[in-house]
Image (cartoon, rainbow, N blue to C red; front, side, top):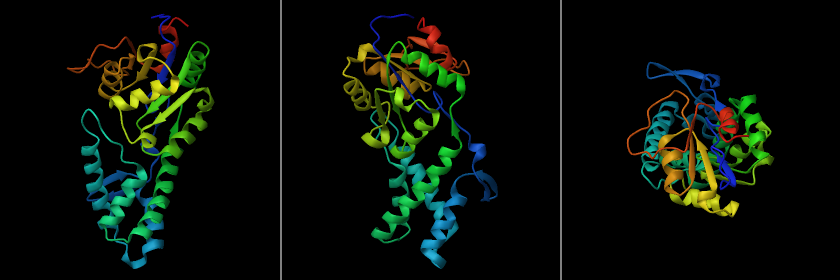
Amino acid sequence: MADARIKAVVLDLFDTIVEWNPAGLPRFEWRGREVRSTAPLLFKPLEAALGEGFDRDAFLEMHESVIREIFAERAGDNPREVTCYQRFERILLRLGIDDARARSLADELRRTHMGQVRAVTSAPPHRVEAVHRLKRAYRLGLLSNFDDSETGHQIMQDTGVRDLFDAVVLSADLGLRKPSAGIFAAIAGMLALDPQEILFVGDTANEDVLGSKRAGMRAAWINRHGKPLPDGIPQPDIIIADLAELPGALGL
């Protein structure tokens, strides 16, 4: 699909450029099941800060409750972002920890949690090469639903592609998540392009395909497992199994 009207390619981050491996997270048992989570890494700073007042089960139960609440807040056509810091702050406040201590401890938990997320996230070399090939022909942007700005930029630096992007929008910075129209408008504005001049590339049908098409962009859907297009999702302009296929699909 060589199209001279496309001036920029905007990429999703997770499951488009990078993959994260939950098998690399610590393992522990809770409620009779084995769980992979950063939670065991969080216990140490919590115990250091709260001493005998720290109750592991109460923390885990509140964490699970807040996660469910956040997922509900992120649903719908115009979802708001709740950052990783805000998540931990909400948990701590509901556990009765005073405001000043909750703010400080929430940031320590954020850094601990995100450090492990970063450690188990990497970009396959063939995708890195695809980003370099795309850069030779197009301006590049990155638009990602990710709840921690600092770590999002660090992960991009880790891949070696951060400097290839002319514009970067993370949901943690904007307070909005895909498929919100506002987050797509933000990346188009940063690139100073009309939406129809942008090809958006991502792996989710609702957030990436529906969101970008509704914003007036073209869409490339990474359909890794050959699934049918869900009902109500507009037809993507390009369907590929991996980002590595995109340069060829664009005639590069």
